[in-house]
Length: 340
Ligand code: AMP
Ligand code: MG
Figure 1: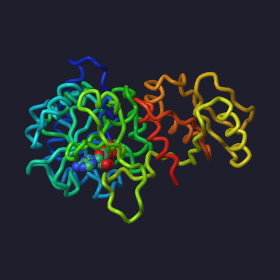
Figure 2: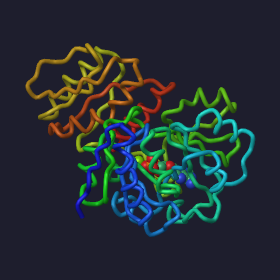
Figure 3: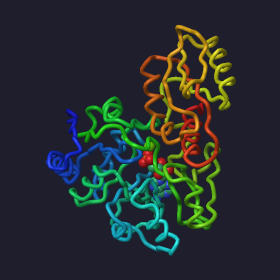
């Protein structure tokens, strides 16, 4: 199969035919990759089990790992899920559209393939105008995980999508780099208190300000024990290089780089602005952004890991952000990328 790249200009008149072309592929049971405000997604009709099954094949994703269903408006959340408390209504009003995914009891119409046989479904209303237009134009809810091969860093550009999935999807809508760069926050609303399954674009602090305390999912899972959140395995988001995390101080970064250069032939650095580097011809550098500017660092995280990987480094040294706000989402992705 040849994957078409449909390049959007941001001008609605020019883009509308391309959106319609992509929507026709979705309606016919095909796969389309598209930008969201978080990362690029790989979408199929969530009401069509055959189409949803193709997502798992294209990604090499295990069938037990459920997909997030993307809808256009709050009425659609009611159409596909049930048992809504006032807390849920508050979350919808405050954070949607946006990078918050809710796990809720599902209604029949949502395919078991999408939910991996669960009685719950993860839903969100994305904010990016392209995916919004695509959902409206296709007239169906769109099941979509990130548009990468299973376990790889998530794609934040159409090039990343094509690196992983060229020939496996009918089309990719290309609207440039995604603005947030890390995936949505996933909140399980079927537990009491709600459980934060994955930190992401909406911070824990912002959620707690609206609905009170949420529980964090324990980060370590014992092998052989059923995962409370399928798909959130310890190793994920990993480039083809060893990821080494260091304390977030310039001196520690420098020292770990020196040490890593003594162990590996080519070493990559995710470098915060101005942090000093050892002098070595075997060092490759990605200029990440200003330390503490979590928005920029999140936006450029996966791009950096992929860029260093493509320069052929064997190890990547990266400082670890703190456990707060958006920094927690970056920290989570890096810890999974670094996990053996
Ligand atoms: P991705 O689509 O790659 O961002 O991954 C979506 C993640 O959402 C999955 O790996 C699961 O961990 C989580 N998820 C999706 N649906 C459910 C559900 N019904 N219950 C719990 N977690 C879910
Ligand atoms: Mg993913």
